[in-house]
Each structure stands twice: as structure tokens, then as C-alpha cells.
Length: 211
Image 1 (spheres, rainbow, N blue to C red):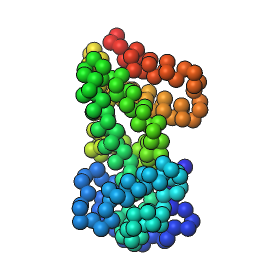
Image 2 (image 1 turned 90 degrees about the horizontal axis):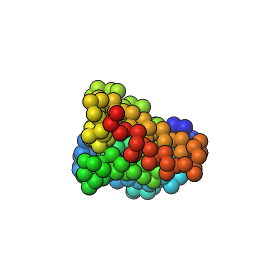
Image 3 (image 1 turned 135 degrees about the vertical axis):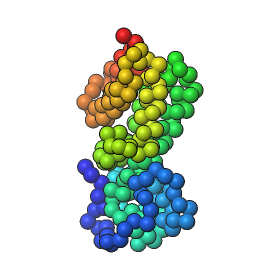
């Protein structure tokens, strides 16, 4: 279901946004809407009540920011979801980088697998914003946004030592597809719970072994 503002939301104005809500560039500290605070509040509200609850009216109440300012900064619900998604990608990339760095080359992929799955299961609404509600945030678009590109780079770096002559980018795409499919099918209750650890161990330690 795509996030919406719901029928009780204030009507939007035909005003262009004053910032780049869908960008992962640093926010302008002079921006009166304080994007970082709005994004954090939207993220918390989404995780607590679902995206349908994330209206600009609710965010104005939670942040104390004037609702007209929120409409100018986030002119439609998609802009707000995109901002949360980009923050989620940045957080995921940072977590993957930390896990990979701590594990070293030999243990990088298993550590990245565990970290990715932990992030996805702990932040389901943010994860949906990243990979279900924002089709424009894709590596298939040139240039890809910085935060999704950084997350992909961490997957690639973790798998590169296992490439053994195979294309690292393709290997990373397959790895990401396996992780994402595992997350969505598990969340949807379509896989056997009793074999979850076995599936994750196969992805982490066996499927990408050098041929």
C-alpha cells in the first residue's frame, strides 16, 4: 500500500519545495522545517503506527513545526517517504561498513548478511520506504542516489573476495536479491520458521563459495 496523507489531511498548496526532500545531501541548517527532525519523527511514527499514520498534520503536532512550512518542504507524501528512505539507506550503509570493518575480509560477507537482516527486521516500515515505496531510488537509474549506491557498495565490497573471477557487481546484485527476498518472504509468513537459521547460514557461508 502506498503511503498517503489520508482524507483528513490539509489540502496541499501548489508551492515548489524549498529544499531537496529526496536528496541525501546534508540539510541546510537554516531550513525552518528542520528536515532531520521531521524525518526522524516520520520514521518513529511510521514504525509505531504504519505509513498511513504519517501525515503532515501529525508531524506538525509532534515537531512543533508550522504545517504550512512542512507543506513547502515536503509538498507531497512521496517527498517525505523518499527523505525517510534516503536516511534509511544511509544508516544501513553505515551499519554494513562498520560490520564489514570489524569482521575483516574473511568474515565480511557473513557479518554483512547478519547486519542487513537485523536492520530490515528491526525497521520494517523504514525498509519498506527504502525498497517498496520509492521505485525511483534504484541502482538501475544513472546516476543512482548516493545513499543507495553506498549500501550497494558495501555489499559488493563484502562479496568481492569471494568473486573468484565472477563479476563483483552481478554477484552483489544477486546477494542483495537473496537478502531482500528472504526479508520479504519471511515477513510475509511464506517461509518455514523452523528453517530460518539454516537459510540465513546458507546465504552467509555457502551459496557464494568460490566455484
